Length: 232
Image (cartoon, rainbow, N blue to C red; front, side, top):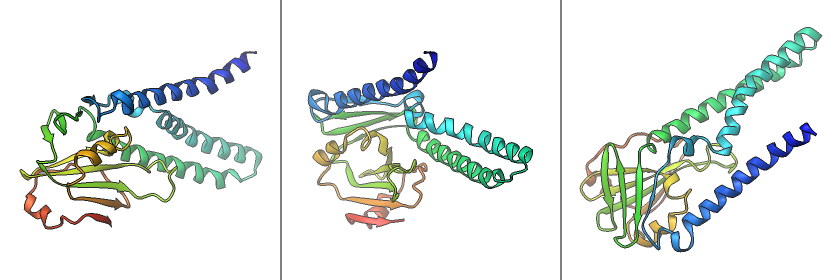
């Protein structure tokens, strides 16, 4: 009976959590709460960013892989059957990949933490507040928009979906915004509706590092204002 209860909890707790997240997502993105209907403000706390179902599962796997590698090697030594020496490198390599993934994810957290984003359909603006900057983006102040994405053939790859937006302002600043704020929350419609006339480009990267973007000379950026796709 106890085993059944444990299995029930393992299955239904994540299911209930997923349903709740889906309902919150729907409430935030459609109907009267949609950013095209009224002003909405968003930010990500550390728990919201890191404690997702997928990341928690991957963290558990990161802990389990070295343990499994040790177990299969230990069993192989004691039983003098050396199959474990073939499996252990696989477990350790998978751990190494997960470590790289979390490091990659941390780079995106650095451009997400303490960022407060406000979508205001009445003024057709996106306001970005953080300890380092306050910027109001409107169709009249943005001269170019780039969407940088991680190129992945497998949509189930943990790195799939990572990317960022670059807003080139008329005053020479480049504002970087985590793709999470727009594509993953369902605000692409806001961009298309109010910034549709702004020259845009989709840029694919083999590895889309989220690096700090410094203010730059906008004249240099204007030389490459050509809409379309390209790959780095």
